Length: 175
Length: 291
Image (cartoon, rainbow over all chains, first blue to last red; front, side):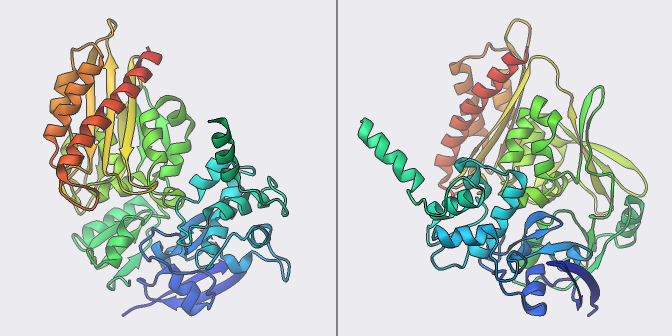
C-alpha cells in the first residue's frame, strides 16, 4: 500500500503527514493531528457535525479525502477562539444556550461562521437555510438561530425572547 | 466508513487527465466535488483502482453565453451556477434547481458535471437538462463528442460517457423570447433527495399557444427521463389548467416509480401529476413575462 505526503495549513499552522489516499480528511484532523473538536456524526454527509472550512468554504470533512486537501487552508473549531477569548459565535452560543448535548455545535459554529462571511446580517430565514445542512438532534434550533443573530449583532446577549414564539403569540391574539 | 484502497492522482491539466484515462482505461474514476462519489466509495459501491482528482484542471468552470448557447463548465459548482448573474437574470430553471440541491456545504463543492456524470436516479440536474434539451460535451484524447441529454442518461448510475472521456461542458439552447422554465421538487425535508422532481420548459408562440414543451422528471424511474407524453399533451395547446392537468396525468402515467421510504408508487405518480401542474403554471407565467 502506498502513502502520499500531504502538507496543509490548519488554523494557521503548517501540518504534514503521510497518508493513505483513502484516508478521510476528518480522520486526518482527528486521529493524526488530534484536533478532536471536529465531530463525526452520520459519516454520510447529512448531518454537518464535521463541518470545517477548506480554502474559506464550508465543507463536510467526512466527504473529502485528506489528499484532496493537500495544499489547502483548513480552519476548524480549534481555530476560532483567540487564546482564552471566545469567538463571537462561541460566546453567542454560550449566552443564548445554543446547545444542549453539544455534539453538533462545532459544525454549527463553523457553518454559521461561513454564513456570516457571506452575509453579515442574515435574516432568520436565511440563517435557517444557511444551517440546513447541520442537524441538531436535541432540536435546539431556536437558540442556535438566536446565537447566530447575536453574533451578527442583531440580538443583544441579554435578549432572550424566542422570536418564533413571539410571532405565535401575536397570531393567537389576532385570531 | 472507510473506502477500499485506491491510488490518487491530481493531473495539472485536461490533456494529462485524458492521457491517464486512456492509459488506465476502465480502472480510473474522476473526482470533481466528491459529494456524489465519496459516499459511494465509503459504501464500497464503487471500488476504482485510481481516483483522478480534477481540482487542478483549470478552465472547466466558466459560465458564458454564445450567440446560440449557454455554456456551463462541468466543474461549475451548484453555488456558482445559483449565484451567476446570467443564470439569476435569464435562466430561472437553472437558478431554481441549483439553489435546492443538498445543502450549502454540498452546493459549495458539488459540481454540475460530477452530478450529471454520477447520474443518481433522484438527482436534480438531469431533469433540468432533459427539459431544456441541453447537450453534453465529452472529450477523450482522440475526439470530442456532443451528446443530447435525451440520449445521455441510460440507466441507474449509467450514462453515455465512455471510460476514456471527461465531461467538460453542458450546452443549453440560449434564451429566446417567449420561453419560461421552472423546477419543482417535492422533498420531505430541506436538502433531501427529491421524492419527485420536475423541470418544465415552455415556449409560447405569438398567439399564446404552447409551441414547444420540455418536461424532465427525476426520482420516479430507474433514471431521469423526458416525459414525452406530457410534452405531446402540451404542444399546440393554449395554456390552461385543463391542459396542465392533462400533461400532469400523462407525466404520472409515464413514470415508473418504486415503492420506497419516500412513499408508495401510486402516491409518487399522483405527486408527479400535481408537481407537473405547479411547474407548468410557473413556467408559463415566466414565459409570458419574457414575451
